[in-house]
Image 1: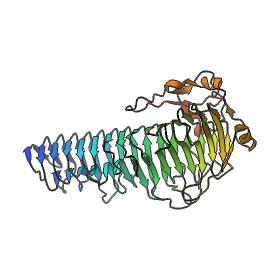
Image 2: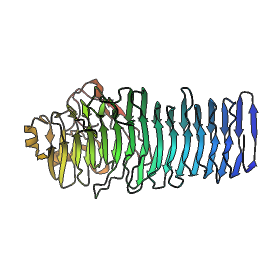
Image 3: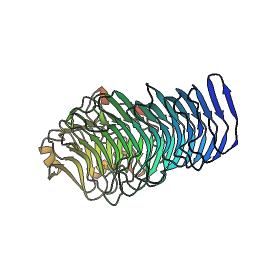
Image 4: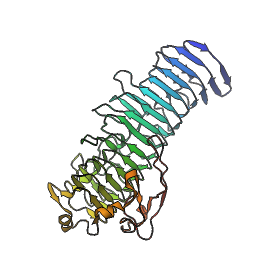
Length: 481
């Protein structure tokens, strides 16, 4: 162990364990404030204060099989706060200053799973280098749970959580980031190489942009569009999250709130997207044939182009509530080709509430290329002019129905719209008693029969949501609730 500039040191060593505890380390060093012994298993590094003006890392334990790094305070401008590998527990650390990475896991031989829980990370990039709060490199699996992450510097190069090719559960995290006005940006990036069997759970997080606009807030999926059928080996669940963007209410500048790319049967449900820009379900080089799941029971409030689906067969976009209160968006639901030119066919767009209380022309659904989607049992409302688009042609509702779409769907009157939600003006979008959406939906089977409960509490901008679900009744509701 090498410690530079220590003002106080207290080490305890026991057989089979290496305990480094309650050290105060200041000054600068060439390498690390605390560096483990490679031959030691079951390291414990806890309750240390490290404040260095230079160095590669505050704590370095890479090379050991099991490390517990907890309750340390790492300040100053070292390149990385904590470097670890293998089966490490990174718990309750406080990391500040200019850094390339807050917590960095380095690949090692073997299969390991690490836990990163309860850390408080607030860092800015060093010069123009990329700054990542939590980085799990190739094939390291991990649980990233209950962390607080803030990236205050408006930089293209800062990412909150970045995971490559590992099984992961990302849950209970509170994440904020300031974006620059333009550029390629991410808050969360989880990428998996095609045909690697992985499970990705992104559950009950709050992700908020505090300034600027991003190209993508949360990106989950195969890193490239490799193959015609998407990544059949990755199970993706995105649920119970609150994603708050900065879609500009007076212009069409927007970000991607969520991009799920090239993943067959991804399950995106029970999320709140607020000022979210656009949610993208992206297909591959060829059309992906979906068999279940999809985008369902989500609440979207104020968006530039709500849901965009490209490159799919049989994608379900059902039981969502999509609301625009300000500038009419480009479209609430868009079905188009993928970035690689693969078309979308036979999507099921049912049981959705699609409303706009702003004046102007509101496009509820746009079919940019395909025409054979199954669209029905939806509720629409527009304070201004309601339209639908297929290709380059716009249609009113009667003309749209004449094309074979929305046979059982309805357009609400203003009086019916006023009775649709519990408290539209104050953001309670549960259905009111006697709502036009109550019991008028289409039964879609067991895969989609669990809806949001009115007991769901989305909380404030800094609180994790409490999502409560319940079964549909004998007669299904339309919308997320």
